Image (cartoon, rainbow, N blue to C red):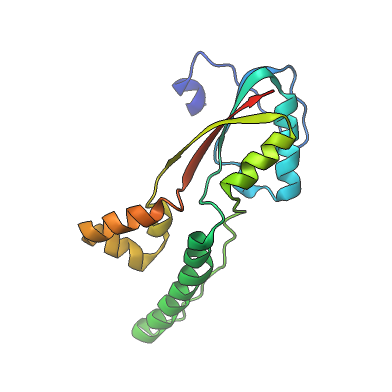
Length: 177
């Protein structure tokens, strides 16, 4: 309902993009913050259904909802944050004399830009362009890095430069050929 209020001139349809077929071909389809939950098989189903739901020349606007799969994101998510969380639990247990349990959360699947573009091409979607945003977002997951970024302009600048390799928002534009 909130989306309808923001875009009153648009017509919206609700369906399961992995199983349902589009009622008719569309000029454009937007998929925002969605594909990170898809394993490779579901990602292919998604692209297949979206491609079949677009008119020739129709546009797919796709947001990957997360950083690309590369060495920086691996080191941040799978190494640094893992140990930071464990250390935080030990310190909290020692200082506050309370058990600090933590839950491992799956933040979805990471893909490289190249993998997204290559897979889309297999389903007749031509890559048009990409825009990246939110270069500090992934670092804010860390207690330590967040404190450093918010307390030091130099650290914010340095992390912003490093963050260009792991933008949280990666917007892709494709056209059906």
